[in-house]
Amino acid sequence: MQHQSLNLLSAHIHFIDTQLCLIHIPLAHYQYYLQTVLKLLFPAPLDTTFDESPRPRDPDSSFSWANQHPFLNVSITPIECSIVCSKQLAHELFLPAVEKAPDVFGGQSDHATISSETFVVISVEGEGLEAGQRVLELTSPLALAGISIFFITTYFSDYILVPSRSRSQVVSALEDRGFHFEKGTEAYVNPSGHHHRHKSSTSSTDVSTPLTPPPATVSELQSRTFALLKRRQISPQVKPDIRLVNCAGRRDDPNSFSADELGLQIGLTKCLIHQPRFLSLTLTQQEAASLLLEKQLLSNFGSQNILLGSKEDYLIPIMLDLNPLPLESSGIVCGVAGKLVGGTEGERLMNAIEMSYLSTARAGTVMVDEKDLDRAVAALRAGENSIPAN
Image 1: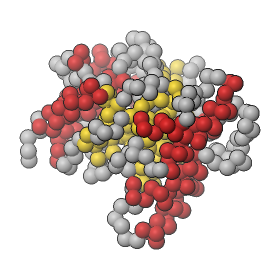
Image 2 (image 1 turned 45 degrees about the vertical axis):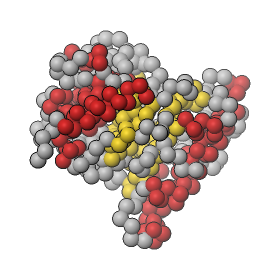
Image 3 (image 1 turned 30 degrees about the horizontal axis):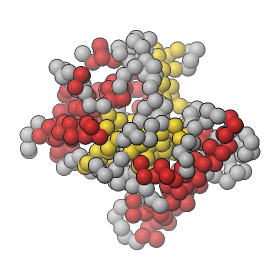
Image 4 (image 1 turned 135 degrees about the vertical axis):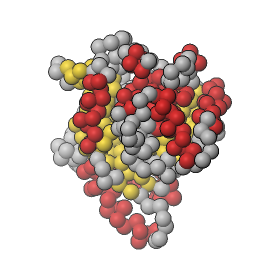
């Protein structure tokens, strides 16, 4: 069943050449780190990028501030502030502040942390499946191989973060599922099916402890996932008053490029300095800035003509506080997606709930359309209730 399902997905999968760290910042400490976050996003004009290559900052240049990083994600949610950036920038910008934090905040138990482990990011280009089914199809081969992942779906592409030490396992898992390396595109390609990407929504973490042996099916993985969540007393937290809009920076008009770039910077700065309840920003070197943010924040971007995407289609977040689980956990994204989109044997995909998923350092966020909220919550509660109490 899983093999046939994966044949629906024809995609190009690239490893992006960078070493990333994951940073967790408690919400109570957000203002302390705000200037560091802004410096990460908007470095001084003569600053250099993480690879020490100077970048032009000529206002008339078509180079975008949003394309300095191979991969960067800044997310603020009701649970935490989470940052994915290069190891070099994590140590240069954030480590000094992290080391001084105990003197500032005293003996508080929750302090910002920088992952000791590094991660690589996989870019997935293509389309042909609905977003929820795509999450399941992309994560299931890795989850069934016992590989921990973070999943981030942006307006343009899907991104999967995996531990650097697991890279060879990822390649093996992809090859086992029919992908092969194509030298001409420098990508792993699954030639089966048809896949044209439809601009999507944004992202989150895959978490559940390393399973030995890994589950044999998505159904088994789903059962283990909900058993783990129940054992650690992790329940879905619905945020119906937070309405999210999925959008991206505009760069289709060369005549307004500089003005659009400046407007996006100003809008983001306004959002960040007031500590938004929910905002996720993803930057890469190939695409325009991708944003997932509360509807009420749109006013910070003026006329909003600088943003692509529908401003009337709302997503509602369902949060999973994964703080009780170790960072190296695996299977949560796939397990949750399987429950919502009907990815287990015998379930009918025609009743699937359309969803997106955002992984952050210590949380996972499922995002569904307003009309599907009740069904999504019921499906997740059913997953909880299907597990007998210890």
